[in-house]
Image (tube, rainbow, N blue to C red; front, side, top):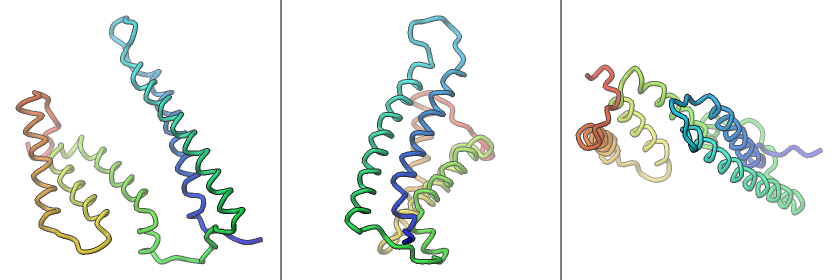
Length: 169
């Protein structure tokens, strides 16, 4: 039996993850607190969005399975290449690295505030996705500092919404 690379299964796996996420969001919407009795409460939008995500996930899963079967029938699946270096694994899984980076960002906002984690997160994301060609560090640094500061200023002074201050005060 011939071994195939995990790259062949990525689209199917991603579609399954989207379906599981949609199911989690739908179940979590039942735990949203309602303070008043209205026809459409605060749980309506999360449920609607989770149903739309689930339907899109089903379409994605169907497409991924059809593509996999087509590649298998026509002999175009990538063969298993053996062990990869850390650098190859890193570049093959940039989406997962980005997801982990996003989770670290979300959980650090509460303790470190909005500005510092946003600057670091934006800089790392820019570096992460500029793997091809020459990186312009000056643009990355300026973008990473100016955009979160502008967002913080806009939310605080014009929308009157307080973002977490954190250790910078």
